[in-house]
Length: 145
Image (cartoon, rainbow, N blue to C red; front, side, top):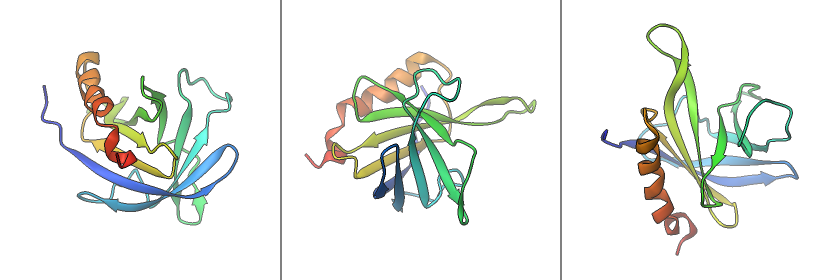
């Protein structure tokens, strides 16, 4: 099992509409991410794509405009407030591959979102389940309980 270092980003709700929400970064634990900008958009999956089992998508704001490229889809877990996703990049052979794991934890009122960005994507489902199991046990942190 790999050492599980991650960079934590905390976002607060800035604006909420019917099918999307805008979040603003409050702080990052170590360093700002090149993938996760200061403003991100959580948009409901309206079914105009081939994504299976993805409820929402995350987009970044670059400059004045929202980037059309999706950062990640949010895949549900047994907990209604915890999701996971990935960041796609190029491997050594210039093939697209999952390079980072993202774990999203939303507060019950959806006003706070914590995104943990791991420096790797688990190579086995056992490793992924092990990481997600820790979040399922610790959901009280973001809800202030």
